[in-house]
Length: 411
Image (cartoon, rainbow, N blue to C red; front, side, top):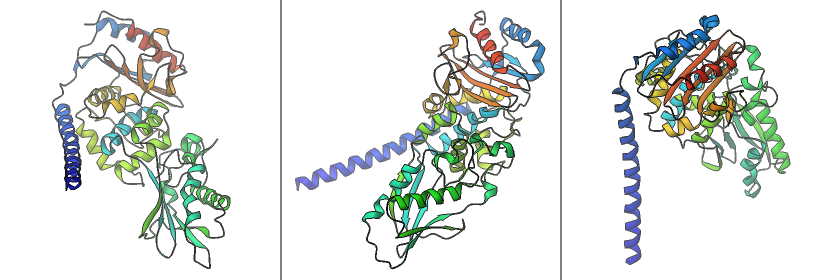
C-alpha cells in the first residue's frame, strides 16, 4: 500500500512538472510577443561628433558602405546609408538562425535512424546532421550483428534518393557549389557533404560509405543498400537505432560563430519543414514581420547568405538585434556569435587591442562583400556595418568600431 502511495505521488509530481514546464514555455512566449509588440520605436538621435568622425573617415568610399549604430536607449546615434539594401553575406544567418531557434527551440536535435519496415527490410531515415560521420554510420548498423537472420537471401537497407534540384538553393553560383562552403544540402550526409571540396553526389557517397561499413562489420553477406525514389512509401514497424545530433543551441555555434553554411541551411529546412528551399517562404516571411522591425527592403534568397541575391539594410539588422534581446532564447542566440580576437570567424581578425574580447558579432564574407553586426559589450551599443565592392573592408570596419569605442561625448 505504501509503495503504491509513493508511486502515485511520484506520478503526480511528474505530471505537475510537465504541466508547469509547458505553462512556463507558453508564458515566456506570450511575454516575448508582448515585449516585442510594445518595444519603443527607434528614433534618430544622431551623435554629431561621432557621426562626423565616421563620415569623414568614410568620405572616399561612402557609396560602398552602410553603418548603423543604436545606443542602449534604442536611438540611432549613427546612420550612414542605413536604409540602402546591400548584400549581407553570412549576416543573413542573423535572421535565419533566430527564426530556427525561435521555431524549434534550443534542445531540438536532428535524428539519424535505422528502422525495420517488414520482412527484415531496413530503412535509414536521415535528417542532415552536420556532424554525422563514418563512425556514426558504423554505430548505426552495429546492433545488426546481434539480430536474428533467417533469410536465405540478402535483405535491402533502403535509403531515399532526392531531387538534385533541391541540393542547393537555386541562386547559389555553380562555382560556389564546387567549394566546401557550398556543399549540397541533403538529408543523407557524411561530414556535411564536404571534405576539401563539395561532394558531387552526396547520395552515392552515403551509399558507398554504408556499404563500406557493412563490409567492415561483416554484414555485407546479409544486407545490401538499395536507393529508392524520395516518394517511396515507408511504413516502419520498429526503430532499431537512433543517433542524435548535438542540440540546436550547440549547432547554433556552427552556424553563427563558425558561419557554417550547410548547418544553417539544414536547420532552416527543419524549421519550415520543407527541403525544396523555395523562396520566398511564407512561414519565414510572416515570422520576420512579427518581429516588429523595418524589413521593407529585405530580400531572402537562402538561409546562409551564400546567395548574391540576398539584400538587407543595416538599419533593419540593428533593429532586429535589439528585438532579439527580448527573445525567450536570447542567451542561446547571442552566445553563439563570434567574439572578436577570441573565437569563431572573428578570432584572427587584426583588430585594435582595446576591442578584443569586447565585440560579440556575426561576420560575413563573400567576394567584394564584408559584413559585421552585433554588440559592443559593456556599452550596450548595437551596430551593423556592411561593405560592398571595396578593398580592405575588414580594416575599415575595425577602424569604424574603434572610432565608436573611443568617442565618449555622446549622451
